[in-house]
Structure formats: C-alpha cells, structure tokens
Length: 432
Image 1 (cartoon, helix red, strand yellow):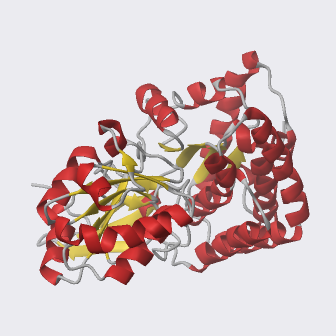
Image 2 (tube, rainbow, N blue to C red):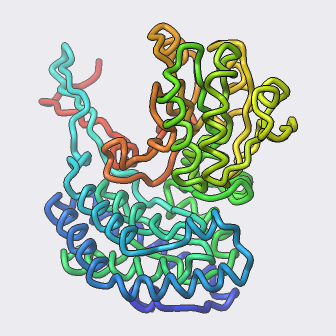
Image 3 (cartoon, rainbow, N blue to C red):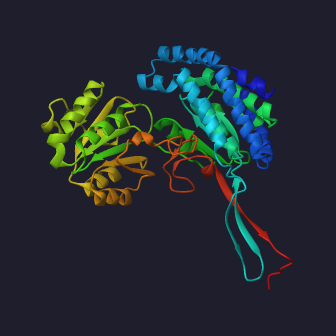
C-alpha cells in the first residue's frame, strides 16, 4: 500500500494492524534518516507548498469536516468538543499561515549550541540533531495534523500521526495536502504519515514500537493521556490536564482584571489554556468580582464559588471540593477567595496541573513572587492564559504543551523537537 493509498483507506482488518504499523514505522525511520540531512530550503518548500494546497482545497477540507461534524453531533459530542472539531475558512487559513510561519523559523538542525577547546587540543561542539521518529496521538482537533506534521518536518523528524475517530475525514484531507507538499519538494512522502484506521488497536501497537519510534506526543483528554502513560514503552511529551488559574491580586486594575478574566475563560473554552479557576484577594472581592461575574454570565458562563465569593454575588453557585481540580473545557468557572499571593500559589500547587497560571496585579513585587514561586510550565503577569500557545510564543505552532520537567516544558516547538550530540575533532590525540 502506497502512502497515497493509506491516506484514503477507511478500514483495516484488526489482524492486519501489527503489520501495517510496523510498515509505517519502518518507512518513517527510513524517512527520518533522509530528513536529518535534508537542506532547510527543501523543508521550507514542502511547508509552503502544503500551505498552498490547504488554501486550494479548502472546499474539500470543509466537506470532509462536515462529515465529521455530522457524525459528532449524532454521537452527542459536547459543544466544546464540536468547537474543537470544526473547520471553517478562517481556521483553514490559520493552518496555512501556521505552516508558512514554521517555514520562516530558523532551522534548529545543525545549530552549534556550545563549542570549546580542551588543553589536549580536542575541539568539542554540542550540536542540535533531530529526535528521529515522533508519534503523535490526538483526538478531535484536526489542525493538529497540520501543526504536528509541519513542526516535525522543520525539525528534521519523521512523524506518524494517529488522529481521533471524530476527526478522521478532516485529518485525512489535511494530511493529503501535506503529502503533496512533500512530493512537490522532493522529500520522502513517508516523512509525514497518518494511521489509516480508527481501530484503537493501532494505538496499542504504536506504543510498543520502541525500535521504530523515539518519542510519543499525546494530545487529548484525561482518559487518553492516562491510557498512553500507562501503556507506552516509549518516552512521552505530555500533559494530563490544563487546570489553569488566574489570580486577581489586591492591587489589580479592575478594568484589566475584567477584560483578561473574560478572555482567559471564554475566548475558547475547550482549549487547554483556558482558565478554569479564578482566585481573588479578599480586599477586592466586593469591588472586582461582581463586574467579572457580570461579564461571564452575560457570555453564558456558569460561575461556581466558595462561601466568600457567593457572599459577594448572588449569581455565583456553590462550588464543591471537586470543582477546584476540574478541567471543565466548557463555559464553567470556579472562584475561590485566597489570602494573597502565597495563598494563591498554595492553591495552585494543591489543585493545578502545572500548565499555565496568571496574576493580575499592579504590584511588581507581588508579580515577581508569583513568577518565581509558581511551579507551572507557563506563568504570566497581566495577560490571558489563552496565550499559552506555541504560535503566540513565536514558535509558528506547537506540537503540544509539556508539563513534565524533563527535556521540554511549555509549548513544544521545533527547537524542543531536537536533541543534541557531541562532535569531537582531534589531530591524532590518544588518551594517556
């Protein structure tokens, strides 16, 4: 089966999945060897060509997405899940621009990170190199197909994409554009492959392919991440949940707080960078909280709070202990009154997921204390948590947000998809 045939395959017999996945892995490994030394110009040409294909085929992309949306509605997907799944002309254009933005980035492969001479005359350099083959397992967001494929290509890695069943038709259509871009640039089509089956057995096999896949990147809900964490024999870049907080400090500007909290919660409720819990200093509960609640409720958001928050505004419903550790991914927010920066940090450390946290304050000392004490991957001052995104960080896009502490943290872009090796140059030295 050729790569082009794989992109249009709809059914694979379960007994054929092990052989299929091994073939995808072997093809990816061969492609990764080619990509590791492919010139930047070829990789950029493939990305620009793929961007052009996305634009030229936007009608076909939306037709494919319409199939997924109809199936999702029939399946009873939530409004937030359907929003993640949906494609329109603006989102297709954003995908295309994302590919072009990645093409415009500096190529990390071959970058000399450090270089030094030893007294014996050896010249040692630490040089960036690709990771190799990256497996990406994701759920309903079809734009991940474009972002992940492009980031892996630019960083010299081959990738095997396994999209969710909800986005099956959309991901196939996007992947076809990426493959055409590779073909136009003379790069191996196996550089970006899409698993051509919805059968979950493909995921199980993928997680055991230690000889063919170097890193797994899971993107999805808690159950998906938990399964992959439990089953994978391959290292992961992952985050379990995006339980993000915004803390409104004692000297927060009220209009800034109002604007930022509304955006942080309601711009897109279904993304991992959406604020799920609002923390607020007791001295500004009476002045700052009611206008914030007014904006949130007007936008259709349900507000749940502790006793002190509810005393300040009767529209706030009672929050349970479970609320503080919940990633809603929906138009719901919890509110807790906390006694200052240290109490806010303690709440975050107890209930958070080390994703993204923000403080709204005019107090520089409080801001610096928050920045230094919070242990999350992304910490912000006077900005919406929805900026937790590789594109907004100037990375072109992201393959995911990593909340782990090894290798990569925060948005994972082209630089984070590389490792390094040491190149040592001598003149016949022998160790005594």
